[in-house]
Length: 99
Image (cartoon, rainbow, N blue to C red):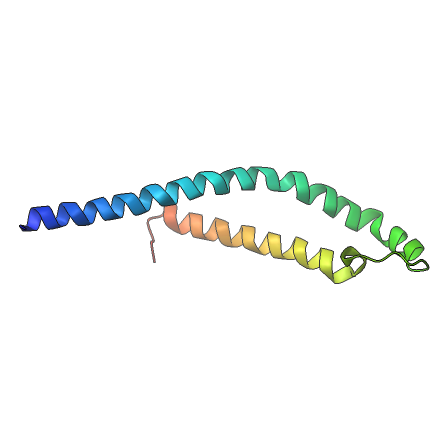
């Protein structure tokens, strides 16, 4: 095999990897578009009615994960931090800093 063939074979492997990445990105973009539909109502509830509901339900046998103040707050904060990371990664990519 000559150098041109080797480079072309390697290019095909890289092409396949990039095409696969692009398919994953398409799915990821759809998730990103849908995220506010889930985050906004949860955030609104948490910062408005949650404490009242918690106070009322603490006196009952009702329990679930969101009665823990930290669980909702941490998910909101984690998503915010991950979105910042996505923006930073995208900015580096757009500026051609691939490292």
